[in-house]
Length: 243
Length: 103
Image (cartoon, rainbow over all chains, first blue to last red; front, side, top):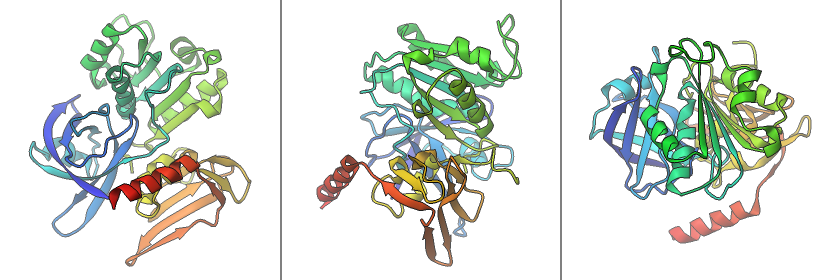
């Protein structure tokens, strides 16, 4: 079932990524981690559908936030990040997916691992944790190319400052800030050992990012003793394009 | 790409497409592979969307579980790769509840 949302706010997260806030009057509510399909239809009837994770926590205002990363040769993302304006309407289907979700009833330790724009559904979980007053211990390992590529930086900092049951480790793959303890590079076994919950605490792990990133994160988590049953993944393909 | 390794998504990603056919969220159901017998969540299947439709493969043996193609005003759903789909009854109840609420 397709619904129509109206753009009520636009916010640039980075030079190439934009958060779109939609007001969806008949929104049935969502669970943190779910996604929506967005459909764009051209005047000749050609249509393209892409999936985007919901970045906002469930809320009573029928607001849905999506963060879209612009892909150089994308069919949909250049429009959504450069041309879409406040007041425009978008067709969307959702909320979708009941597997890659975090619910406030979950009290076990939660390990989140994001690669690039894979942070979006995990941010919804962190925001949902805060808005429901959950005390579940959370850790986020957030791998990004460079400091300028971090999404939601201020929001993350605010949530962190407020609650020491949420831990955050940034891992930079290309360029790290000056004096950063770890040289730039991909995630590895040592980083997973340092920055994630010990497997004997039996954390539920949520991993979201490009397919190759998710593959290696899952391998490291399994190698450090996490049960495959406790690892949930959301891959978004080789290029970051969700479809 | 000719490798199955890095070009797939998770079964999760088919939830929207499959919601056109199924009343419940099939991605949270368990699916038994007709080839190797493994039982995994459909959400954990390997999903290929580069084809003219959607192909889901078993995460254990890569055998095709499901094909969904729309062509010439028709939709083709091939489930022959799944021996069984196992659904939580609480999900079924939810659907009954939702239906009755809407009438």
